[in-house]
Image 1: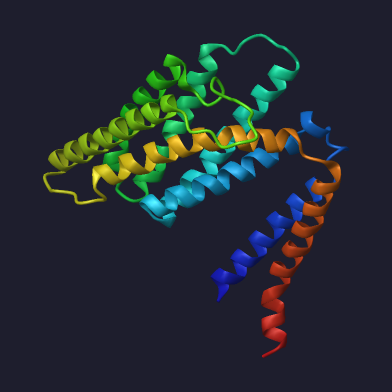
Image 2: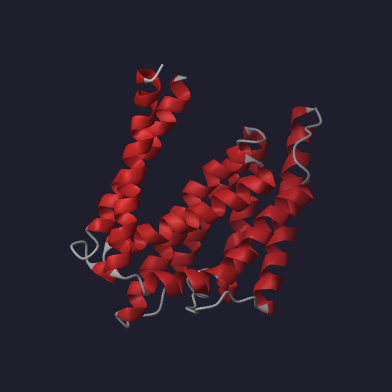
Length: 249
């Protein structure tokens, strides 16, 4: 009883706050303001939650979607502002820093379904393969494109395949070494499932990002106000639901 009441209050508060941000779109700077970043974060967070939860369970999905959605939305928001301002090209160190943080998020998510021994071995391996991919020029910001349509590119398929192999092998190596160090055999999710989830999500994300970026860049004030009103009302109803249950008993 207490758990679902807490979830109702938390979810309702989040939707109400999001609705308030949408209703003040122009005041917060329009496309260059923080709301554009918030819109990206929420959209990508929802995408990661669905794909990661389907692949490795809800616990993994909840933990990783929060961090990955926040990082990707913020990264693409900064890149969009840089392009509009015709600023200097991104420095490679930005990709390394963000890649390392993404590796930490994924490793923590996998630790939630394994243990800390696997995390200690897995984290440096994930950092290595993500940063190698990014330094080769395949970071999300470096490949940001705007398109009205979802685009399936052969390059993204090969990168997704590389991510699948690297993630699967890293997880297999981490579990094997952790089992040897502990003197017992750990049996977690299969490595191929980890690889397919991370690589498949990366491929789908690369295909959907141009369409999401096109949508965010063309957000209208009227449409945002309508969504803001909807979220504010929905948040209020969710927060009020436990009270209605008590009153109607």
